[in-house]
Length: 265
Image (tube, rainbow, N blue to C red; front, side, top):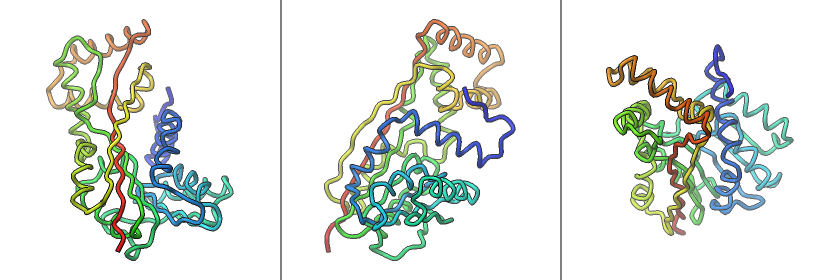
């Protein structure tokens, strides 16, 4: 398990997103395909973080295209610029500090827009989607990949403990139910050919679950809220560690990949 102890927040964020990307396998590339990204396209990645996707998209659009990533973390954007330099795509990749609810671009600027696990952190995700649609060219595609906190589940015999951990995760995020809302929000923005694909993600390694779901933090939150006693918290940790040692640990979450096309004028 990778340790984040004593790391600056921006460095921890970069390592966490790199860790997610490795576990996701070909999922990122699949989202680019759903966006219909072509050489020469100009595309936008909202919540680009350290540039994992902007660099991946740059390989698709090539030097005749352009990729723009926006984020609200300056140091993470510096990481993104460095990554683009290392990947040899800096000439057609730009990373900008911006508010996702007020994108600094003119209407009808991009051939495609995407966001991945961003809406759960947004207090007003409908405004973010409205901005993505506004800056998208007619005929372009919006793609959003997002989970739903209600689908998080742990293989625990004590369902009360399971529901407490889920509640702690849900209350930790601004918009934990983002994934289920996307279909309605896409339709309300007037997008066409709206499609939802549900992508299950199962974890059979406790160290990975600790990292992705931040299980230690969830336990601390539940304890502070009075949902757990110290004894119960020690007990659930012990049960998870025993299951992991036996090779039977399991938890899962469902992600929704939603895409839509902006109507031609």
